[in-house]
Picture 1 (cartoon, rainbow, N blue to C red):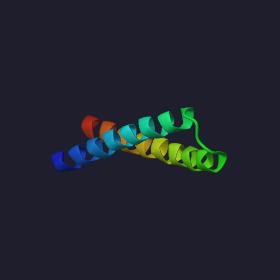
Picture 2 (tube, helix red, strand yellow):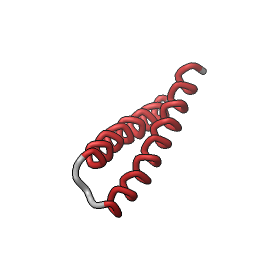
Picture 3 (cartoon, rainbow, N blue to C red):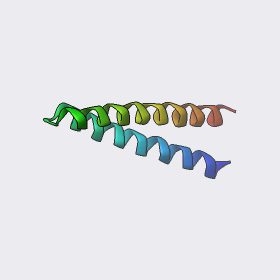
Picture 4 (cartoon, rainbow, N blue to C red):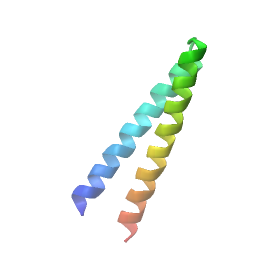
Length: 62
């Protein structure tokens, strides 16, 4: 159980790191086609962050 919690925490932290990276790239000066790719990546990172964060919270509480 502890290994699963640690795995989900690491996924959560990696998603957060990716979210920060993609956000910085979106703010910077990029082409419009790259901007669409980064927006899609941003959506995926937020989704992974929410899923892994909620899973960790659920496992820690129960």
